[in-house]
Image 1: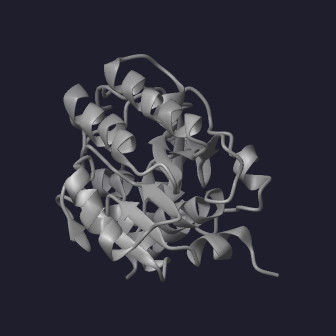
Image 2: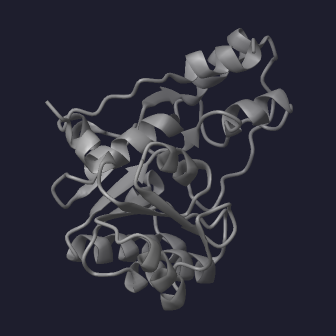
Length: 252
């Protein structure tokens, strides 16, 4: 039997934003066109520009568009352009799978309001929203990098939940969601307390944790573990663990 994720992978697709996640998704899609103004892509340019999308459509007519844009900590104007403007510019025919953040589910602020507005625009056109936990994977794990560099621990109390998702598990989730009912789906591979995370880091790396905590960022602090029950009910399950990744990274 062909799974929904396999069916989605067989559809002609655009991946808007070919960075860490988008590039991993492109590798899983045999009929794929990547669009990005900064990262290497098949079509280089701003996806909010109709001329850029016209060039992309001349090369491949998509049945699904995966929106994997990122602002890399940009201001409200960068959020508005990367999310609202791009979603508004997309053709109306293809199914849209929009990558958001689990941080959009809590807290206030202009950037979060913009992200939630983009989510709503996607839902109104029958698309799906994936609220992804912080990603890690080959060449990227902010938790491990900070620890090995001796930087302050992540902010918050010892019981603060830390939610993580391997990039390949995220890509598999997006493929599955291409055929899912229109809704917002939180996606998290695993949740562990801050104290448990640093105990794991110390055990696997042999490096003691820093004594000080970093100040909170504009994203705020997660107040609870992410509930991925909705996407798990569709058959998704993570295949990677943070412990295995850290162990392999330290002994490679």
